[in-house]
Amino acid sequence: IQKDKIQKEKLGILQVFGEMIAHEIKTPISITSMQSSFLTNIIANVEKNRIEEDFIMKRENYEALKNVTNMLIETSQYGINTVDNLLTSLRDSVQDEEKEAILIKNVVKKSIKEYTLYVPELKNIKVDIIDNFQVECSYNSLKHVIINLIKNSYTHNGSNVKIEIRAKNNKLYCKDYGKGIEKEIIKKIFDKFFTHSKSGTGIGLSFCKLVMEDIGGSIKCESIVGKYTNFILDFPKKS
Figure (cartoon, rainbow, N blue to C red):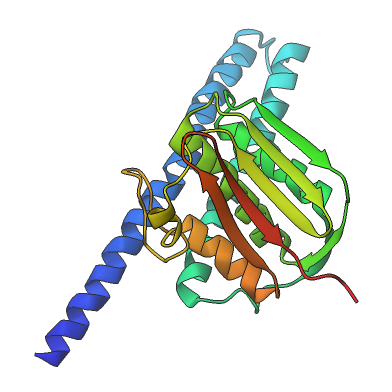
């Protein structure tokens, strides 16, 4: 009986993990498919202008080809990083990941650029870097912490939500002026697999907590229903 129970628990975890991977990489795969079709059209246009054995490429096709190639590279990397982060969240530690000195402004800008690649309609994001402090962390992990917070705002409030990201005194504030979160839910939002969204996996905010605690920092959430939600990331100060 005990063996069967353990087996069922393992299968349950595998099912949840499978659903999370499917959910998280669906967007990168969709974008890759779309860009591949665009690439096929570019090649078809080049073939039309073929002169005997030579292919003539117009500048507009060259620029389009360059943009598609860059987007495919970024999208593929995003998908790989997403799976890595899911695996990390199941291991309950990011301490083995390679750490580097990161300026907070750089990772914030990169996070916004990367996420809005998939959600271009999300444009109302204001960044205010009062202190461009330095963090010792895995660049990829910290980037996905910020992406998770932006994604959380978008998922619960839509593309018109106003988001403010501010850095000051070794703290990063990610605030949205959306629906807000009830107090009872705030108590659970950092628990692994907890979600109050139909499309959520319950892994994003628990991953954020995991990363912040592993580098000696913390994350908390403050919210007033109908007014705002504010995530506060407190980073350890470098000695």
